[in-house]
Amino acid sequence: MMRIPIIAGNWKMHKTVTEAVDFVNQVKDQLPPADQLQTALAAPTLCLVPMVQAAAGSPLKLMAENCYCKDAGAYTGETSPYALYQAGIHHVLLGHSERRKYFHEDDDLINQKVGAALRNGLCPIVCCDDTMARRIAADDQIHWAVNRILADLKGLSTEDICKVTVAYEPSWAIGSGQSADPNQAEEGCYLIRQTISDMYGEDVANNVRVLYGGSVTPENTGAMMAQADIDGVLVGTDSLDSRTFLEIVNH
Image 1 (cartoon, one colour):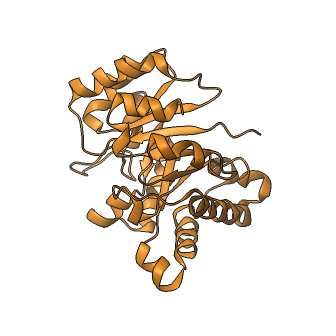
Image 2 (tube, rainbow, N blue to C red):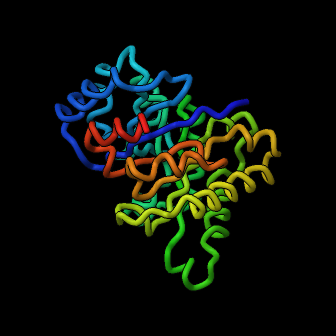
């Protein structure tokens, strides 16, 4: 099966509802057909429903930046995966390095969130990272990323793993302006795919999309997406401006 590339923006804690809807209106008619390239935006929860309404009929998909591992309950401040799906959100970003660093999310919790998302019809984009320090000290950052994938995807069925996208984001590249070069990025994505192949078989691994994220720009998108095992990019800062985002999408 051919893997359809995906370019996803991650806004983090940026934009008001009005700004988010304005952005959607600026880009929604200038995106490639979804059967050629899928385009998505991960936005703050408050913005998602108005964005879904603004994007209706366009190729643009909206993603949550996080969800909890329970459908409902006494979990003040958390977002229900069930409620997200009912609101028209079909994708969710899980395990981003900022969630791991600032909110102390571990692989066990992320694994539970992945299961909850899939159970509710959401397609997770699961992030794994490494550190520059590990690369310099021992050149073992890829092994660490692979171990994380084993933990985050533990227990998923073959049917479920085919609904998951994995994003490889070296932590030293996120927001730093210093991107991995295309060969480094390809190495990480290739080894992630090989890990999935070891878990589920080569045919399944060849159907799972693997993205690169970390200081993605209009200038490096084409080189990244030309690599055999990179099926798209997860864009941070450069997804906040509609013109720059469109440059990346239409690279």
